[in-house]
Image (cartoon, rainbow, N blue to C red; front, side):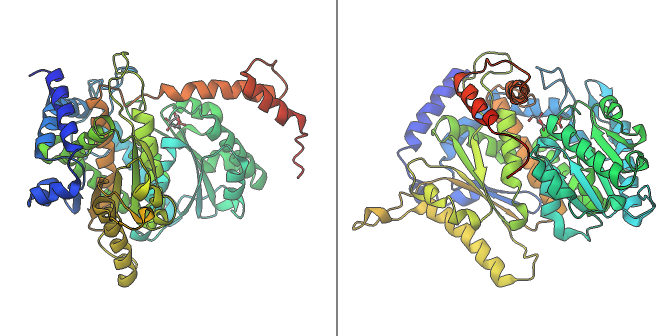
Amino acid sequence: MDRYDTLARLEKAAARIKQVSLSEMFLADAKRVDRLSHRMDGLLVDFSKQKLDGEALGVLLDFAKERGIADFLQKMNAGEAVNPTEGRAAQHMALRAELGQERFALGQNVSDQIAANLTRMQNLCDEIRVGKFTGASGQKITDIVHIGIGGSHLGPELVLQALHNSADLGLKVHFVANIDPAEINDALAGLDPASTLVLVVSKSFSTVETLTNARVARDWLRSGIGESAIAMQVFAVSARADRAVEFGIDPAHVFEFADWVGGRFSLWSAVGLSAMASLGVDVWKEFLTGARAMDAHVLQTPMAQNLPALSALISFWNLNFLQMPGRAVIPYSARMGLLPNWMQQLVMESNGKGVQANGAPVQFTAAPTIFGDVGTNAQHAFFQALHQGPEPVPVDFIGIIQDAENAPEQHRTLLANMLAQSSALMVGQTDQQNPHKNFTGDRPSTSILLDALSPYHLGSLLAFYEHETVILAQLCSINPFDQWGVELGKVLAVKMEQRLAGSAPSGQDASSENLLDEINKRPNDGAE
Ligand code: F6P
């Protein structure tokens, strides 16, 4: 059977499924929950509220086989050039592999490099936490200003916020991503330069936002303590150590990671240094161990029970066969507020592509429009549209079983809300008298329950979403590891800035020229 047969079967299955409601599917199959719920080490993923049945899933699994998903994952794990447009490996799994195991990237053994880097990270974190490493004036480091954006920011801040409770925080971390000066100004306000370490995180070490903020922080250290603070208190994490050194950072303070780690997948490298320093080395190791467990799962589990593969197949199905282009991500955990943002970058920057890996136009959409917020806040913001808007949006509900706050009643209410929302979306309600009170129901969701918001389970969850993203890309024949789509805007930003500075002639599109004129008309002297 060739691929086109399978696509025709998928179309046919979708036409049939569209006629059957989720509630009817539950009635038709008493074992539906069992069949579509899967467990892995303290993680329960329930796909039973997604719009597919055994037959549709069977065709999707055939498609996964044709697309060589299992093979692709093995190749990625072996360090082959799975990023063909840049000729690179994508070895984020190697960063969380058991130490001592041999790992390769494009045939080169990278195990020693990974182990050495981890040891350096641990040593620095331990030394800072016990006060052995001090600032230029001998003071203990109490704060880290982590400067980085996108993949060099979202993961570490998410992990730190989420695991806040798992550790006796050794250090406070202040994240600065935006070029908006308000962010760095707010971060530095109230900090003592004598006890602050500045960590500049940038894979390319050429990102305008990061370099600009790094200069501001460097000047702040210089004027607070003097030149000696620059050498002692500024560190960098980058795949371009040469550029970090050129920027003026002591080579001994540069933590390198290789170009075989994609920016969106770099949390597990030294990019996580500030989170590790704050949470402590043991917490960080547990976090890596949880991700490693998910790696073992994705590599060893048959597709029919493979959590990231099933989630990717369902996303592929919703996007391309059930015409649902959105996806809401709702963690019922105030500490996981950054999960939707992290996923937005992971999925949309990886998979928002118009051409396949071979350059031909895409046949499928690989990136849902991801948005989200924490439950229950989201219920009071955009859930109205999820329940009654004309376009169904699949939702990921993420709940934590263990109450970490010692507030069982409140925690129960939180979980009850999550269950109520996914049920309401599916079951709906008919009010014959009042159309405003009608809920169509039949709106799909996946529910994920974590035993606890522990480092281990968080590691597994984030690795789950990483693998899902890569598998979804592979189903759609695209390369998830490049991001050329961010470049044009960067080039135009330089031109716009020159126009705003009065150093370039007009020549942009008419709308932009009008906006430029509007801005240039006003004096920009910092006055209100
Ligand atoms: O948005 C483009 C991008 O290159 C992302 O892929 C990346 O995570 C972010 O900018 C930051 O890049 P860097 O780590 O090189 O500063």
